Length: 319
Ligand SMILES: [Zn+2]
Image (cartoon, rainbow, N blue to C red; front, side, top):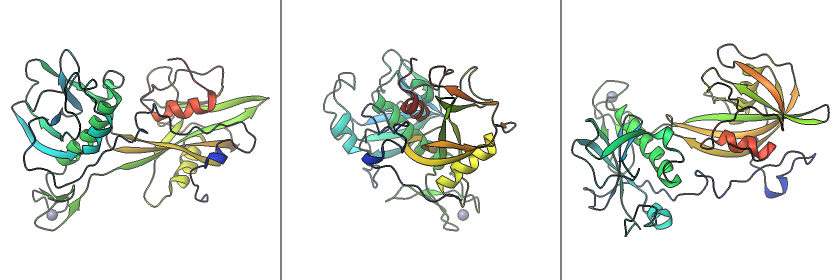
């Protein structure tokens, strides 16, 4: 098991050989801006008239058909409305222009709900994952947060221990079983991503992998979920060994990103090649290859931290 690693300081942003720049969170990164979520409870008993509404049908967000703006209030048929807090979001980022001309955006309440009927006239459901770049970043991030809350709520209606209907907590975001006392909080699944680097015949290279689920031609950094009982760093070593048969060293933290599909928190690292021949793990990795920095394959889109992680090493890439 590897020693615990700590995030790099500003002085450590270049590695010992000066070859591997470590990017700091970028102001343009939709997940690093600190959108000021204040998901506090208890909330108001009823929504304010000017509250923002994020209404879902499964993984799709209800938006105005023509403008991709949020609906004006909850449509009929919404259920299980939940207060999300987020006053600071309003103060910091919800300018009137960003809200398509709405005014008085500071301190607006944010509510989320499910709609079990079809989208009303003038509105439509769009899958959240596909809305990146089509709605403002704040809305995409806020939608991801709201989606995770809605999904957690929807999938924990009954106690997993005794099957009694659960009830929402008043002062914290929890569902409790009135029969056996089991408490269920919104869950996160930590995952670790590692971009492996090496020098080969004088050329810097990165290891990129193809999952069978990837679009044709696309490669990315290696990633996997942290197992119970592991540190993130141990998971990084284990995942790389399992999926590519390679050993790593000099593991360095890069950045993290919430990934609400359905409830991951991705922790991204760089590392250096420490030995081994590539053997892709059947079923997990279709192909793993070393790529020169100037001969890269198709990369993940900019919504994912993997793109930033890769570009932090190889430099900006065209879309
Ligand atoms: Zn129970």
